[in-house]
Image (tube, rainbow, N blue to C red; front, side, top):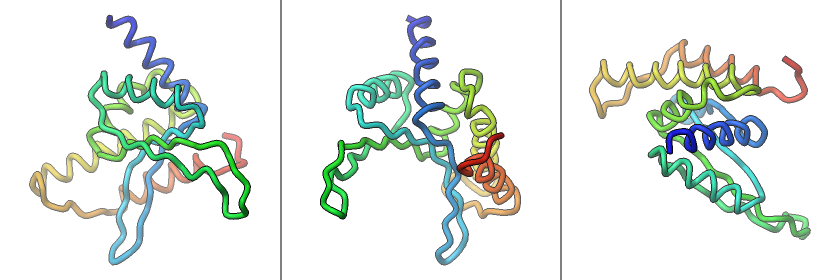
Length: 155
């Protein structure tokens, strides 16, 4: 059973390497905030169902959205599924499991692990449910990940 799960994790890492995104989003409304996210977008419902099964098996909560199948200009397109993992502990758990299995997104996953650990450690210092503010460490990790995710640049 364990060997089968290990194979599934390698398969999932390959999907994330090719079809996934590892990111930190920056939001500026009343204050600046940063949010970790791992997403996988695909038009194959079969692939999305396999990913859901693996995530359930390892106890990771996810959100799955079905994108619109019609564009604004009236043309139809194939429906797309967008599977997202947002919660700090969930992102950290998945990132640690996939750290040594990713090839293309290995640097990104290491940055997201640092970000999640930083957020969790800050919460422990403040209190479990209190808001722990953001500082330059989150901004630096955001900028590094943003640079890696920039399109058209070979690294």
